[in-house]
Amino acid sequence: MATKERSAYDRLPYPTVIVVGGGFGGLEVVQRLARKPFKVLLIDKQNHHCFQPLLYQVATASLSADSIAHPFRRTVAPMPNVAFRMANVTAVLPQENAIETDHGRFTYDILVITTGSTTNFFGNRPVEDEAMQLKSISQALDIRSDFLQDFEAALYLDKDEHAQRRQLNFVIVGAGPTGVELAGAMAEIRKTVLKHEYREMDSERMQIHLVDSNDAVLRSFSQRSQERALRYLQGMGVKVRFGQRVTGYDGERLTFLDGSTMDTNTVIWAAGVKGQCLPGLEPAFNTRANRLNVDAFNQVEGQGNIYAIGDVALMTSDPKWPHGHPQVAPAAIQQGRHLAKNLLRAQAGRVPFTYVDKGSMATIGRYKAVVDVGRIHFGGAIAWLAWIFVHVMSLVSFRSRAMVLFNWAWKYLSWKNTIRIIVRPYVRKATVTEQEVAAPASA
Image (cartoon, rainbow, N blue to C red; front, side, top):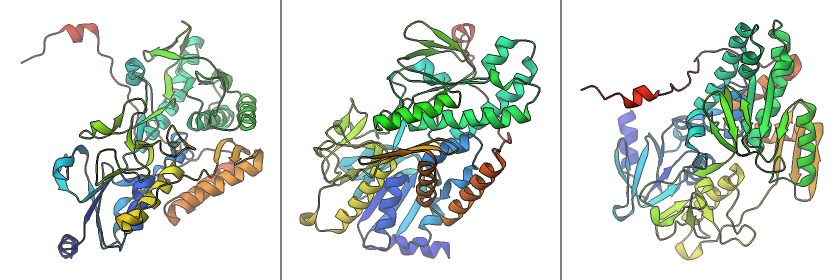
């Protein structure tokens, strides 16, 4: 039966649209082209869609990984003109209308690149080698295992206060939405889990530091929301440090530009992102923004049949957004929806893309959130409930919505993070010694 289904797909007499990346934008294109006169192939190095806005909740043991992940094959199975391949795209070959992957070559009539973004360390290699990131489910699980292992290890350091404090010192670099939400969640863990379940240890020795080189948290939000979020964080005991630029980290000590240092075993980097551009499209690569230059129709600069949407696309033609649209899920979804409509139109009927900013929101903790919608700015419990509603309704499947709601209900009724099992211990990268570097390689 499976062979017949593949053959039926292969025999479709439609133009082939390859979508590279199954994030918010890519999935929107696929769903909009389902059962339309296109032969669609979705390619992603993972076999699932990840709802990234809730990754921090997986990292802080509030949600299980499968609550925010949805298999691509379950999504495309009912779509007769859509197929999925799990592969890593290594290069684009525009002259041949093909892409190269670790599983061979695929040809296309139309290529849609929606590879999203990756963590931007701004060329700081020592920090990149040692700090933790939060862009995928596996990284979220690493963070979860790391802080739980730190709690267990700290119990054995009761006779060495300095070592114990270093073990319980958590530094988050970057005070954007991800950093703020992580810091708030870690502060709640100190108040509940550490205080009540690790009674042998002084919970006040756990410190959460939120570090940013700017002078405010949530820089893209209104000043009122910035001030409110800062009050929330400081009220929860988070130590917010502004004007601090990180220059190095060796796994035990964080170094700042002014020469000061901080001892810590855990640094989580949330200070920036950059587009994941594919080799072969270098002429369109904007090195300043680490994104692909696209026109008002999301067409990659210099290419007639290649499009880019979402975090990887830099559209500067919109006068309201001269530096490109924000690298957030709503922008990717809107671009994906618009591109699908344009592909279904005749060439002459294409319409340029216009981004509609529907607002921003971030949650800091229980009954603590901030929301900006146009000129309306509010916070507190109402903002927190609005945040919950928007995020639950944005999840891909009903199953995910039900699981998330159940886990949140239990957490907020019981004051406990529900998932605190170390099933995959996190092992830090081994440090290569000078002797190992100098030693000749064995034959």
